[in-house]
Amino acid sequence: QTVVTQEPSFSVSPGGTVTLTCGLSSGSVSTSYYPSWYQQTPGQAPRTLIYYTNTRSSGVPDRFSGSILGNKAALTITGAQADDEADYYCVLYMGSGPWVFGGGTKLTVL
Amino acid sequence: QVQLVESGGGVVQPGRSLRLSCAASGFTFSDYAMHWVRQAPGKGLEWVAVISNDGSNKYYADSVKGRFTISRDNSKNTLYLQMNSLRAEDTAVYYCATLIRDWGQGTLVTVSS
Image 1 (tube, chains in turn orange, cyan):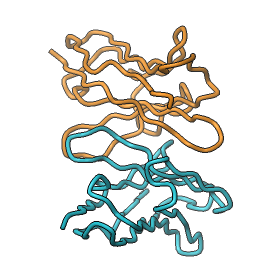
Image 2 (tube, chains in turn green, red; image 1 turned 180 degrees about the vertical axis):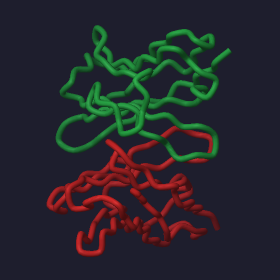
Image 3 (cartoon, rainbow over the protein chains, first blue to last red; image 1 turned 60 degrees about the vertical axis):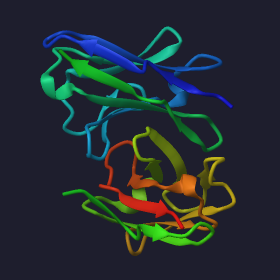
């Protein structure tokens, strides 16, 4: 069973830049996995940030960007703000139908 | 504006069934594949199932395969999740989503005796 890996936690200073990653327990992430990224704050539904590697969802500021870095998908937040403090999840398409979420990264802005 | 509104959650005994609905509005429902995603209390997101835009293709997570059925009625702009043989570990908030855009607010399913 392939596991999607994310950093459990990360911290960034206000105004700073942070890159969160999304990998596989076995193998490399490519655009063929259609990596997508979601932000969730406590008590709220997830919000789509980036889909299919690097397309920003409607209304998402360009401070958020997606890419492939090495063998992982990446979400980069530039100019971090206090309200970026949240849980961030990636999801990968495994081919032949199923999708798998990563365990999420808790981002602290301090 | 775009809305996805889930309903049908509640408390159910182990082994029983429940059907969730997701009413969509504000976009062309029949253009999008639709997903169910769940989140157990205090845990991360878990993908559950997907159905293609025309309903012809359906895929499930191993944890629900054979027990859950996803379906849709494009004439009613509604997505469904029939959940049978429910277990305590199915307790979660269930979200419908396009995954590339919109998410509903979720409906809580609690499986308990």
